[in-house]
Image (tube, helix red, strand yellow):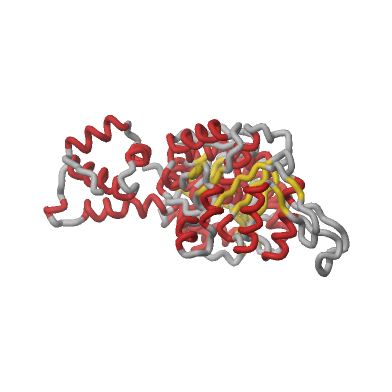
Amino acid sequence: MNKKKILIIDDDVASCRTLQLHFISEGFEVQTAHNVEDGLQAANDMQPDLIILDIKMPGRSGLEGLPDFKQAHPNTAVIMITAFHDMESTIEAMQRGACEYIHKPIDLTELEDAISNALNRSKAMKDDLEIAPNTLNKSSMVGRSWMMKEVFKTIGLVASKPVTVLITGESGTGKELAARAIHNASDCSKGAFIAINCAALVETLLESDMFGHEKGSFTGAINRQAGKFELANNGTIFLDELGELSPAIQAKLLRVLQEKEYTPVGGMHTKKTNARIITATNVDLEEKVKDGSFREDLFYRLRVVTIDMPALRDRKNDIKPLVEVLLGRINKELKRNITRLSQETMDAFMSYNWPGNVRELNNILMKAVALCPNHIITPDLIPKDISQAKEAVNQPLNELSTNSDDTLLISLDEIEKLHVIRVLQQTHWHKGKTCEILGVSRPRLRRMMANYAIEEVK
């Protein structure tokens, strides 16, 4: 096995020698230099896997020489070291391409961790995945899974029909994007799309926000203000987190649905509205109807058509196209050009459960792009609970393989049968979702169930 090569450039000869001896004992091939020019020559001769570069040296400083090292060896990680603790040098080093910045006196554990991360990142660059960042419109929805295709079909069928639509799904699944897609494909598309978060305001302010108020109707109402329903006339009003509406607002919303009219706060006359109403919730409204916190008549008025947005963990085949679109938007916003993910990162994404759904994926990528020192997103740039997700998924298999109990030495067919049953149970025997997770067709799933005598549990 080839030894990893480290080049140490520091004018402190004793420090260089100490580090050289330590890392040779750790199995590395190590060379040293004591100024930038000698370091550049040594790097050309040695082709190191990693460079440790001191900032303050006679002649050109490490900071001044850093761009030359990055230009000549773009895939070689550079760790900067310094005895100075000033913020400006740290910022400049990171902006010029350093992957880490460590202060003297050097903590060997800290340096070893930095070297390990840097070498892992370099290894990842050799087996990375090229991503084609997609610059779709911000309101575009993404998905190739059968579940998202069903969502797209339903949107296509209801968009041009004047019916109320209730969009359900966990937080972060894209309910507002679905509402915008309905609006954009409808006869209301030339009008405004107005969104209201029903949980963001207290009841009195929410009523004013929705229906407007007249001058002097309450303390602070120094002028008349139009409400969102008035602003959404000829367009669409989207009410998110619908389950948080108070009984009083529920009654007023029911009147809008029934009579197409409302009364501003403090007003004496009703106003007409032709705004299309689309609502969304991440709670079970039927349960809220049962416990009396949501009006039954309003519930049935709102759910003429229901669109259920699937959780990301149930459509993992969409992760790669989602990453492409999200990276395209994030690159544009942050003025970056990140086009690669390491295979380990993508494997972690595919293993993680995504409780925050697409919104969580977007936030993770945003942070990774902002902190990425080169052009590839590696596991050290994402949270540990995600980067270690694959290990957690594989743990039961690892335990199985190391257990000495002969009863655990079962056939591949038995393992496949157990896995199919487990996925069927997790999806509550939903054949479509099971096929999506297993990556098989429905006919093949039926054959597998028949071959293994798997009977559906009602």
